[in-house]
Amino acid sequence: MISYIQAIVLGLVQGITELFPISSLGHSVIIPSLLGWNIDQNADFFVVFLVATHFATALVLLGFFWKDWVKIFQGFFRSIVFHKIKDDAYARLAWIIIVATIPAGLLGLIFEKKFALLFAAPTYAALFLFINGIILYSAEIIARRSTISAEQISSDQKISKISWIKSFGVGCAQALALIPGLSRTGSTLSGGLVAGLDRESAVRFAFILATPIIFAAALLKLPSLFHGGYPVVATLVGAICAALGAYFSVKFLTKYFKTKTLKPFAYYCLIAGIISFVILVVR
Image (cartoon, rainbow, N blue to C red; front, side):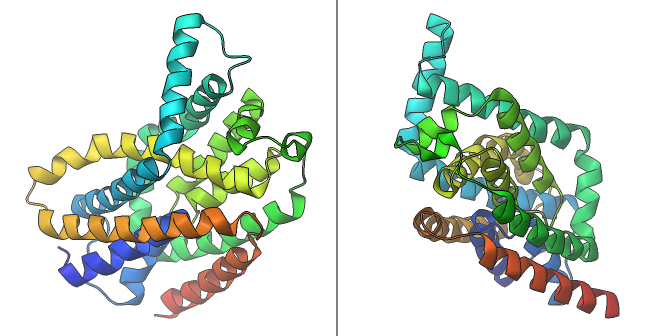
């Protein structure tokens, strides 16, 4: 199964790398192989463990952006009651989140088993980590400040101003993270930059957008944790460690992206991806 030490390491790695744009799933798949751990990464318990650590991260994000989520839910219900969203920033934001969640939700349900097979393919994860670096670097090159970003308004208002097509495009970018090695934060953030958002707004959108899709996955997978002989305690330990890692990550990154770029993370993914790939292939 999985030991407590392994659960702690994987939990911390997941919590930190889920919010950094360097692919938590990719690291969770690559690290056990690099360290020679005897873990069946294709087993159901490993998938459930990863979902549990992701769920813990989502709880941290929900708590961190709690006031925003209250406004988003209020906006959603206003749109239902009054059938109007055009002049209501949070009503529009609520529906933008729904539209952007559709691609990952559909692809996750349709290709769940095929994506799960990649959890036992660390060489592919290393390759996609390298590709993730290319995506991050490309996003920095092509990103430009749009009229949305130039306005002196809040990040939520900026996000609410992107078109439905662009929000769906950001959702498609988020769906790339179903592949180990491609970062949810990195893909979504890159999609936001391409859609015309500034970095601060794009990272905020990435963090908010991650919450519903992770909760949906948790609802599907976590119930099986309690009736399948799975390592419940080790999974809870990993989830707690993931929550701690996520808390410090989100505090750091929300400040970092106010002035900094994606390039350091791109360089890391390029280097870590190619080194891991070479080691795994040679071994």
